[in-house]
Length: 102
Image (tube, one colour):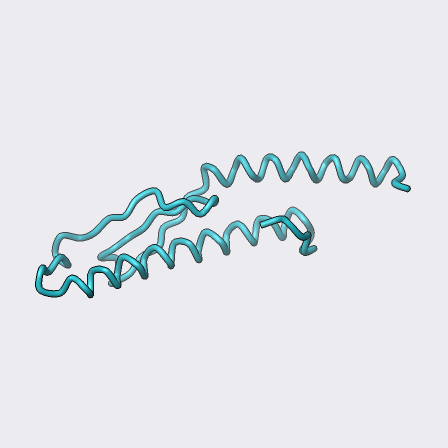
């Protein structure tokens, strides 16, 4: 049976989790590829907001390279967002791995 102190701690953790979820909506990170020729902006909720391509790297004769850079930039952005969210979650939970949380 949960005592009052544990219940209060659980409620505080739940409130902090809700606040963090809201913060993840506004958190943005940038991934890049090709030395910054292609950038992708990703939210803490893992949504890609934008992709920017330097016109100088657009070569109609080598579309594969551009596709690879876009893919790499998006994956870099997603990786950075996941790392940022994981660090914030770890600070919130004291490093405990709680199932069902990001």
